[in-house]
Length: 76
Image (tube, rainbow, N blue to C red; front, top):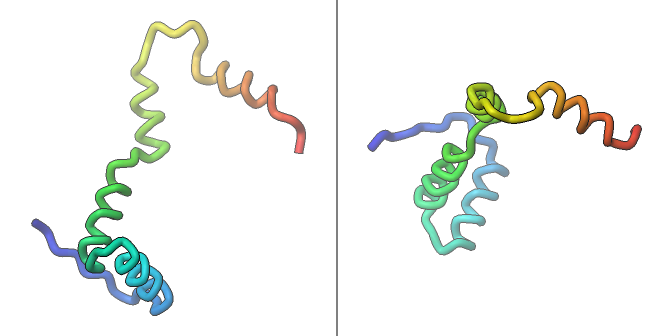
């Protein structure tokens, strides 16, 4: 297992994380490991788009679908 050191964490952020850990019945370390694991499991938008770029067989290309969806949105 790897260790992680976070420097210059604002006091209010630390307090919030500590309070959330206590609310979850966990130590701060347990809480942060769970939260970082959850965060790492979520793909980023570039990762999603990269995965989609290799797909074939659809009737509409990504650019066409995006343009169609943008046309359906009300003007802001």
